[in-house]
Image (cartoon, rainbow, N blue to C red; front, side):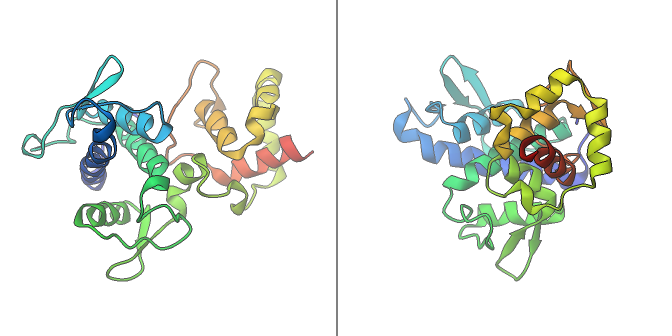
Length: 235
């Protein structure tokens, strides 16, 4: 999505950016030339996170490395010029990297942050509906964050109730035979790959052959994806 951010989303973008930047620096400094010039090890959680941080201007790509650009003193007004798509990519980095974070890797359990920066992220996630505060110290992911967690295999697509067959029929009638063959291929049997490939081109209720969206977003209908995945791979 390219729309501008709401005030709550802008705060979420700020807090996730700062936390994710510090995660990349702390995790990658020992294998990089310096804390200001990081190598992502060609590892997905680092690649996705560093690329998302580049989108918001906190990192810059320099050959095989990522230069860390923004310090906290430079963040006054940060987020005002960014779009919802930028936030979607940051949340993609957060979801992918969560499996490597002590306080987050059990994605089916409550999150109890052990540092203030991650607590700020959880509070901002709660304000946007992606988490729910279950106590003064603990948070749970909500279904609204499902697109990101399913995309990275942290949640099971088929825990979402499959859409009625009539809705699945509408989708299948709207996409080409080539698209159906693509979505029925072995690559897309794996549910995280299926949702990525389906929603990359299923946009506003239409299959767009000329589009490819890389990050999950709020408009991913996981119930529809569950029904379609079952039809194409279990029949």
